[in-house]
Image (tube, rainbow, N blue to C red; front, side, top):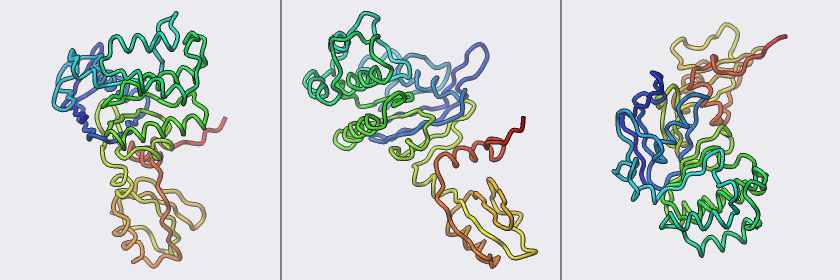
Length: 298
């Protein structure tokens, strides 16, 4: 399922949580949605799930609006950060509820996944730990065989082994069924391992949106030492710079080959290209040193 937001606007009491947002999630992509607190991620996700209606613009799933569209909603599964369940419901009760309201619920797959999750399906959901509730949410959502799976902080509360296993299940659905997965998380290291597209949201607008490969190729981290009296060109597109003695570490916007060629022309004493993480891209694309971690003295 392809997801598109076009000039999407949503306001609350005069505050624009989404301000002309543009977004494209390709069909079959694993899309990481990242941004600082208050950027509008949860508001966007609730539009995708059909909970909110936009004030202006469009939110389309395969070209159709999602709000008050049961046909589109039946193809979507959503796992929020806070899991929903009825207070007196067991996992089995919630499976019966899903089976009654969701035409795509696959009881056979639910039974097969039960061998994987190994939860007591007769136990009250409210008696389960947070991690076990999250496992139950994945168990139910994957049994829907959704075309679009929306995840908000999806593996928070899961132990490392279960995290790896759940991601394995999701990646298998992406590979075998072309499931589109949108993941909102503050764990950028984990997103880097699973996502092929990334959107950075800030103040209700999409700051940038690219495939992860393009994003990593558009910035570069370089460590170098220049001869005495030699300085970096003033027009170099520096996002961040730090120095320890004669050694400088700089993050630049642009292609690695072009930037290293410019720096090699300065006859550096040494120059090394370092891997750039998604977390570093996120921090410095949002505003460079203003968003970097600062040392605070008390």
